[in-house]
Length: 272
Image (cartoon, rainbow, N blue to C red):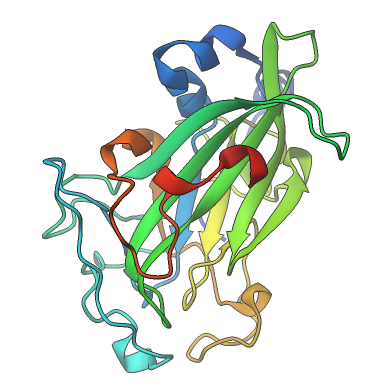
């Protein structure tokens, strides 16, 4: 499952001390929250053969056009989408893609403060991270991603990752940060799996519908549409780290039309 690393006990102890590193409130309030967005930026994974992600705009104010859906045709699943780099085993980098305007595919983000609600939810900062695809198997244009929720353990001086909400075919699935299967601290351990409660989560796009999950699913439906979002095939074939190209949602014109997909420029993060 990816690369195996032998980690000294002292390093493991250091990681435990760094687990879910608190983020200063100033990182959320200054520069639009960019420092906070960097501090929790996810790593995205895609299975070989899927329609790979694209930039949603070209950096000059022009929208990316979607392509026609393949309607569960495995032989056309990647038609019209960016070319996959040569697979080199688990964790193959998805980047420097021919025809794409950026070296690393963008993750579009925004940060906001949300007051507590009638359900008893605590006040929190939330950051949305979204990725664009030219299609999923059933629709032209597709937006998928997560919202990370941060709460304060010390009266508002710092915030830690409390939970994550994942887009799954119109449903928003909410789990505790400590339940995310695969997390990592940074450059030194990004290839590792089965580490919990560190700073950056690993999230897996389904092969056909691109629904977002915090785990693999390889038991079935590798070459055919799944009946349920939870069964959408996913693994660690290709990856890119959002931290390498975070683009604010402000570069997306909220009047751009994406078919049935919701652009992060038009999503109410607090009610997500």
